[in-house]
Amino acid sequence: MSIDVAVIPAAGRGTRMRPATRVVPKALITVVDRPQIQYSVEEAARAGAKEAIIVVDLDAGHLVAQHFSLEGPLPTLEDMVVRPVVQEEALGLGHAVNEAAHMVGDRSFFCLLSDNIVRPGEDVLSEMAVGSDDGSVSVMCLRELTDEFLSKYGVVVPSSDVNDGYLDLAGAVEKPGAKDAPSRLGLVGRYLFTPEVFSILDKTVPGVGGEIQLTDAINALGAAGRLRGYVAETDLLDVGTPAGLVEATVALGADLS
Image (cartoon, rainbow, N blue to C red; front, top):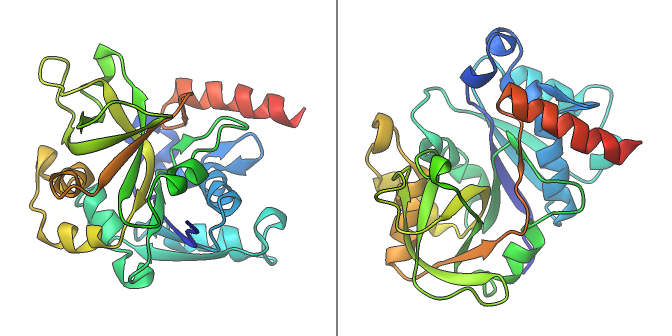
C-alpha cells in the first residue's frame, strides 16, 4: 500500500531537555548536522510520502516552517511538501494528531514522533504499510520492553501470536506499569493510521494525565478488530533526553564518517 502523507507531532515542550529547550524548540534540537524534525521528514520521504504535516505550538511554528522553506527546499526533500499546523493548547498527543485531520482528509497516514529517530538502515514504515492489508487496518510499530519502561510507554493487548513480525491486536493501555501490563510489547512512536482514527479522537475524553491520549484511540481501533502490530528488530534512538541525544549523535555521526 502506498502512503503519501505523514503527520509528525512536534509541539512538545521538551521538558526532559531543559534548559536547552527554554529557547530552542525541541523539534529543532540538532543531532549531528540537522534538527531532529528533519530526520522524521526524511524517514517519511524514504517510505514514499510526499507530504509532511508537522504539528507545532504557537512559538515554534514559524521557526519550523522557516527551516524547511528558507533558501529553497532541502536537497534530501526536494519532492516533499512540508506544512505546519498549530496546536494552540497542549491537550495531549491524541489532540495533536487530531489537529491534522482537516489536512489529511480521508487518507491513511504515517504518524512519527520526532524525538525518536530510526537507526541507520532500520526503517520500519514500509514494513508497516505492507501489514495494513491495503488500508483496511491500522498498524503500530512495537518493541519488547523491560519492566522499567512498562510505566513509560503505551502497551498493546495481543490477540494472536507473532507471525513473520506481525500480529493482531485487541487494544492498548497507556503506561500500565509492570504489574498491570497486558504484554511486554510497547508502542514506540511509529504508527500507520486509517482515517477512521480521527472520528475516534473526536470522541476521546481525557485519560491518563488529564490529556487526550492517542493510546485510547488505538485501543478503540483494536476493540473494533482493525489493529495490527509490527515488531521491530531494533530500538529507535530517543533524542528526547540528554543521554539519548549523545547516543543518537554517536550512532548517526558514525554513519556520516
